[in-house]
Image (cartoon, rainbow, N blue to C red; front, side, top):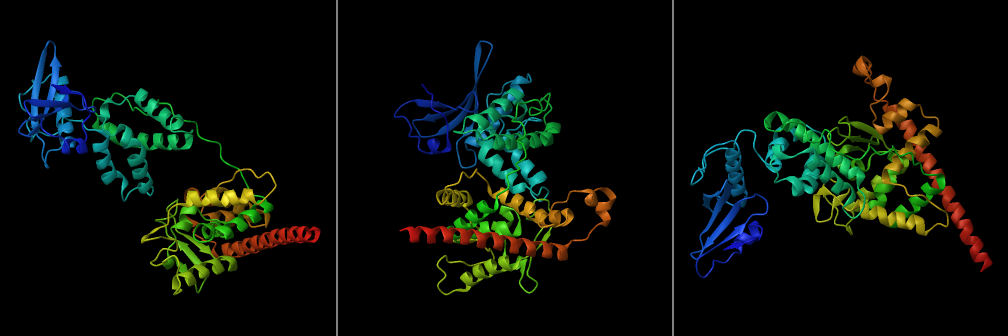
Length: 431
């Protein structure tokens, strides 16, 4: 009797033997793979394959700690490959045989890719692993790598872009990029795959670069909302405004990166987007915020339980940085919009960085210094041979630039508060 229920590890563990005879449960991943359960309780994997008019049954092995569902699927795929290549069908598979040449699932090959080509070699290793484990492997991890077509990739990317409750074009494009890089590495190992499946597959067009810059009024509203949010996310936002650094670089800051005697913050290359360390001089306003956090750590009434080397540690796990910034940002934005009667267009945390860069230009800071503050490695001074010899870090120039920007932010915040206070005083007088 065949019971068409998909196989999972949890379902196999919970299977009860039939009172008499045996039952077979088909796998929904590998065609022909079945688990046979007898009245004795013994669970055996078999592969059933029809060739012409004859049905063949091959015993793969008994289910055990050393031979589970994943191993049975691998062995079944190996046998199916041999059958397609014209080899004879054995009555029982050889448990010691290796994979057929060029055969393996995306999930299996990814582990090799991750170990040999990503970890320790790519600066974005953590993001690559996250994208694969969250998006790619759940959908395609069990697919034989050399059977994937550009149509399969297109359907997967379209599902990513349009069928997840909202359009996520940017993430769909990122998933395509990571899958394409994986296949560029895997192609020499896949003899049966005629062409790179991602090359001509559909993917969303690159989004237009954002050009959103906050007005002084919006910056004042954001500062007020960040004060209302408090530590950690409101504090993160104020440091984003003052330092012009990236969100991840601020959230993952560690105390040993700060030189409080020189008022310098060194972002190591391991955490910088371009892999190059960045020395960030701290304005008086930034120093005040950092010292406030340090005092919170040292306080006997430390309400957050702050400890460890992270400036923004996760509650209960100080070895890691806090999560939840997207939710914190939504609360801050809701406060920005709630406390104004103006029509403020949406902006993102990264728009803060662009606003700071624009502010530096407005204050007359040379472009090369502004780029150095942002840790951008673009421009003629960094290109070709010039980039080899031009090693000036612009630390003194960056210090003056961020001092000017810190004072400008203070002016904007004070002016915004004065306007709000005048409005409140007028309302009280009218009342």
